[in-house]
Length: 626
Image 1 (cartoon, rainbow, N blue to C red):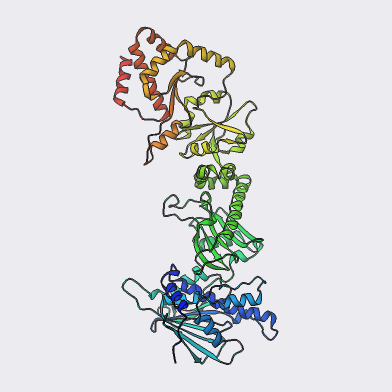
Image 2 (image 1 turned 120 degrees about the vertical axis):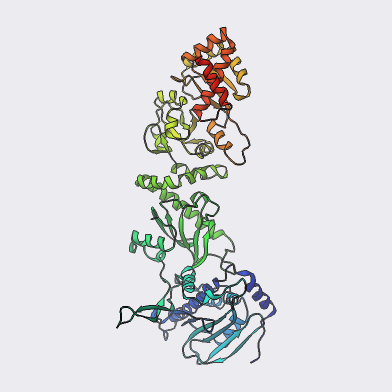
């Protein structure tokens, strides 16, 4: 039988496909099974308009059969089959899709959709096979034909015997090479894994003869080998079922089967959209944070299917970074795929889906916050930090999406509160949303800077995570209320009378404060009378955007750029220490130096900042005691 040559452009395309189009060899099986499914679909569509045809779904299936001895893998279908002319056109001309032509001619609109569109998937078989044989008998034909090829050198077509309508594809699997193993494509377990991964939701049964062992009937101890035909795929995906048919247990089972996590999901979201773009999706909000969530190994993204066939394991474009904890899948028949069906040709459809998914996730979280606070706080304990990063990142472009999802500990309640809850109970005379930052709630509660705000009866938000203050600086305000640190220069609380008194005291003691400022030189920007201290003698406050807590966080980073807060040393003029300072300034300026250094170091310790010279500090303490 004379060998026919592929056309020159087809030959180049075949060589390129074998070597570079597909990123993983195993997808060859996805492509062949998808083609087999298309072949069965074509009979289904013909039966819709041809009264002489009946379509009993039980008679239609795909079968995968490995043979280790012969090193063959056979994929059989009971589909529409191919004539000699179709074998030449569909397999002899690469990138001519019989499925696409059938789809166009028959204007398919009934909810089924044929998967193939490029006519190249079949040739993925040559990534794992030295030779490919196709035996096919077309519906309505008395003849069968055999197409054979060993790759780019060409192919032969000749008559062949076949009793039933359909197609049989026989792959002669390659021998193992030095760094390449092809044995997995002959192993039952590997083949089942690949089928479940890519083709689990093909609508027709995918069968395999699976071997096993069982006890002999006449002996409990002896085992006998057996082979039974099993259906490997699930066929009807959970996302195509009516929500009313499904229970929480069904969704949890799917979560476990897909290995989305080892925990139980806190919440599931089942989406079915039939509009500008059609898609279905099941999303999960996990209960626990994955162990590698904040590592470079963690990959965000949703499984992406096209007509039930897995296209991408992790489609990162479907989720924004701030919702990267969400697990699940999306299936759409409207995606424009590239030639390998592994990537999208353009992302307009994907952007529409992503936008809708983003909105759905936010709405679900808001609903959880409103209707099941305990469950939301469980979620927030695991992923609240990620939401705060979302507020801070991208120059705050997502703050409007996320601000109502944030929670913080509060001075008024021993629980987390939302910004909306805080603002809703603010007294009329309160101008700002006050917050204090520290390593722990206990430490914050002891900060001297909180005294005046607490005395006024104003609530204080406690920021205990390193990202908190950075996120709030990006947020700037909430419902027209500006955020204000209790350590900021002006708290906006003081009465006019107290303001005037403070200014008078500051002016009267100007020389003392200038002397102290000179002692501390570059350590502080200013020394002044405190308007916030009630019982404590001293504290540090800041001016400008960088606070003391932000300085600590930035200094701990690997690329520390020595960013410093503009610190102000505030003295309580009603404390005995202030009288000691004034007396020393009048009679013994060396003592002023001693007291100033002690007070500054005391303020550093209160803030959790390191003392530059601990030995000098302890010596100063001894001098005071002596």
